[in-house]
Length: 67
Image (cartoon, rainbow, N blue to C red; front, side):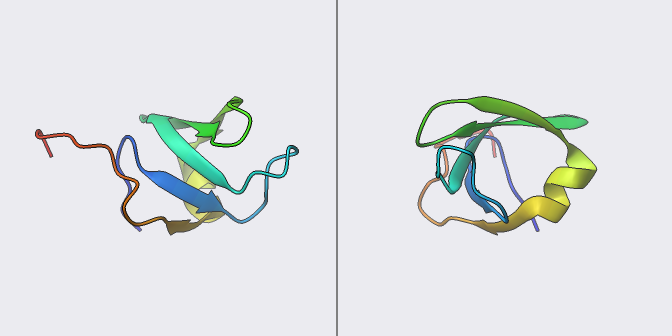
């Protein structure tokens, strides 16, 4: 599965606040995602993140001309 900075993804488990959607705000060996409901950010190792992603939501990508 391919994802980019600014994409909104749905993970297999919801956040404690009940939110299901997360925005990718940093990418590298670890990926930082921000809950779209409460704004809390979490850093997850890339290998674990790739297993947790259920889907990349369409129409939520950041407009970045460098891609």
